[in-house]
Length: 295
Image (cartoon, rainbow, N blue to C red; front, side):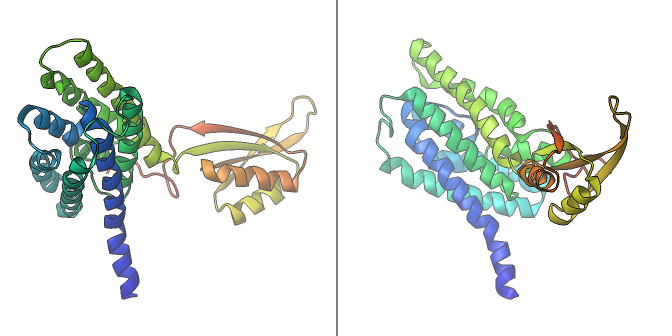
């Protein structure tokens, strides 16, 4: 029992470490060498590196001290402990990786491709850390603050708060020329991809679907869905316009990854079943998401 409890306590920190490893690799291998400011604490650290020669790992730690103080006060000490851990691990990874990476990056002549790869990896790293209640530091702390009390997409909050950080790209160039504007554009391209990736990582397994099942064997189908999928089933009274017969329509809301099981079960019981499936924006209640911001 003690070992299980210990593993349960350690697991979030292992996941955060993995997320920070991906996050740091993206920054040192693809962003910093190409002067791409990707937002957040790492983006500010990149600016500090090119303006004052401060190593990215050191700059990352310094920037996060202020944000950490806010997080501990507003979100509580438990969140603060995980954030301290993430910042420490991230600072170490950034500090160790930066000297090991090629000066011109892993893809020296592929600035655009470097942006795309870094954006996907950064979003993945942030999403992994946030999924266990942690933070990669930087502006995603703001995302955690907002989403704790309101049903707002973390990716959108990150996009908004990183907009100004990326604008600092112009500070690391001597002149506002074609290269500087290009760097700014790459930063905003990355911002959009990171936003999408974070949302996908966090909601990929929680996206839901609404299914209507039309079958004469509704009682058998409903029974099997309840037993196998473990989702509530609702029967709706209906009447066929052409046949004039009274019908029962099965309504079930399930996660998207469960939808294939619903379709399979219904098809096995009634080969002539007719079904429709549509995605839903959100499902709130027992077994799904909790409504935030309402007491």
